[in-house]
Every structure is written in C-alpha cells, then in structure tokens.
Length: 204
Ligand SMILES: N[C@@H](CCC(=O)N[C@@H](CS)C(=O)NCC(=O)O)C(=O)O
Image 1 (cartoon, rainbow, N blue to C red):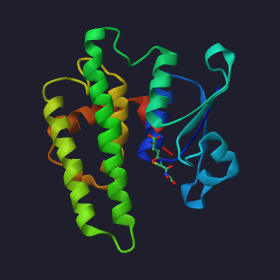
Image 2 (image 1 turned 30 degrees about the horizontal axis):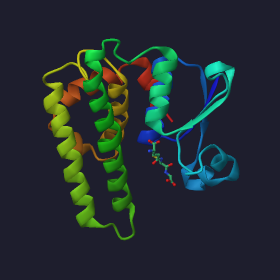
Image 3 (image 1 turned 120 degrees about the vertical axis):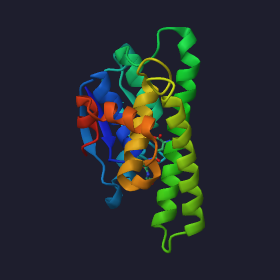
Image 4 (image 1 turned 120 degrees about the horizontal axis):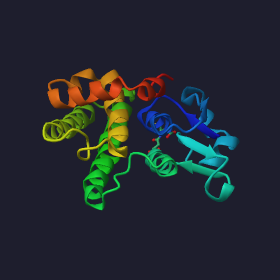
C-alpha cells in the first residue's frame, strides 16, 4: 500500500494520475494547502521543501519503505514499479524523455508562476501576461506535435502523456482561454479525460 499526500494542483494530480493509471493500490491523504498542512513537522519530515505531492511506499524495493517527493519522480517510480508507460524500445525513449521533461518542467512551472502572479495582491499584470504568452506558446507546439503523432512522446501512451495531462487539465480549469484554438491538443485531451483512471485521479 502507498500513502499519497496531495492536493488538486497539477503536481498533485500528476502523482495521483500515476498511481491510478499504473494500478497501484494507494490511500489519498488530502493536504489542505490553505491551512498550511504542508508545513507541519510531520509533513516536513517527509519533504523538507514543504511541498506536495509526497508518496510513502510501505513496500518499496527490497521490501523497505520509500518516501518520495517530486511529482515526476513519483510518476517514474510508479511506471517502473508497475512496468507500464515506459517504452520498451530504446529508440522510442529519447522522444519520450523530451516530451516528459517539457510537460513537467515547462508547462507546470509556468502555470504555477502565472497563478502566483495572478494571485499576488495586487496582481502583477505584466508578469501575468508574459506567463500566459509563454504557456500558450508551449501548448501551440504541443498542438503541432500531436497533429503528427498519437501521443505526447510518440506512437504509444507513456509517462509523458500522464504528465502533460495534469498540466493541461489544471490550465483548462483555471485559464481555459490558454488552451483554446488547439484542435489536436483538444482531441488528445478528450481521449485522456475519458479514461476511468484519469477521471478518478482528477477528483480531489
Ligand atoms: N517540483 C515539484 C513542485 C511541487 C510544488 O510546487 N508543489 C506545490 C503545489 S503544486 C506546493 O506544494 N506549494 C506549496 C508551497 O510551495 O509552499 C514537483 O514536481 O512535485
């Protein structure tokens, strides 16, 4: 059994999507960021950065307990543990890795920065606009790429799709205009969104 500590942010969703899609039994421990539950001594003992998501796998490699933060590390951990969503063909791995990193380290952090600037009091409008433009430019490239291939990193569904969906879904929920006008991206997202595991994962 795995304990997941998370909230419904894109990083939190990425970890939960990983657990659901990989079919790993887990318990969700909801962390209320508004109440500062990610800054308690108990939480900081799991992740000194005081950030969700965190998993504790009580049956990790060698039967030992593993505590892991970083949503993309959790995603890869789940993929390796389950043997799913990592291409077996070495020739398919570079494109998958590039797509995974773009989804995890371009889309989500820019969405996070945009949200922080928009929620600042007062909001910092030039930064908000700059991050909106940046995020749309990433989605534009994703749209072009998904016009040429079925999935984020190639012909098969991989961890890159799971990562991208988390960032896409959060952006669509909070800033729908930023994902409008991208038909290939929208078609890919529709296919992802109907998956039962994804539907369970995004409901916090
Ligand atoms: N690189 C980390 C980022 C984690 C992160 O930024 N978590 C946010 C929520 S999405 C958080 O806990 N924010 C609260 C804080 O930083 O105090 C990951 O991918 O998990």
